[in-house]
Length: 267
Image (tube, helix red, strand yellow):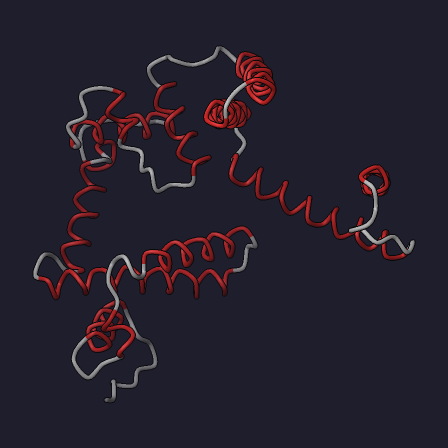
């Protein structure tokens, strides 16, 4: 099967190509997919687009956004085949949402800064979703989000009605308190109790990051990268000195770790 050659393909071509791939005589793999079978693909492609953003790689970002758009087109085609909705319905829905949630642009509201714009968005969102309480707004935060991101969004919603610390020091004190409670649970509690207290500790750490205006997901990602880099230097140092890491004592490895830390700080 041939498809017309063009110098520049557009959105409509993407929709049509996906239809062909899933139609009889198309691609066996594409034809066999369901929403759930490619769920992980959607997540993977989204994170790859995020990585392109983090690396400020415009060419890669263009490619990865195309991969994300393909996922949208596949899911839309599945529902078109089922007779529920299609890509036009999706575009119609998001256009209507953008118009109604920007009353300061398309309506009679005003917004002189970013904060006021977000307030308008949140007010309309609660109204259109028929959320009568802040609890309902918090419950609407997707459980499929990464847990650090979800907890931060929930905390921001509770903060909007004044349920929040006065400053970062209150959040930091709570972090210390949860750390102590985890210590007690480790010494005397059950696995369930330890799990609960560890969760509270992580939730409190997210609260601190929110007060500092730090993206907790990025902070943890950067910390993990730093750990990997530092570990690689420890491993290299151990090899240079003929130390088998599997046979070395914790004291030996910790000494190498501290040596690497000092070298990094001196740079």
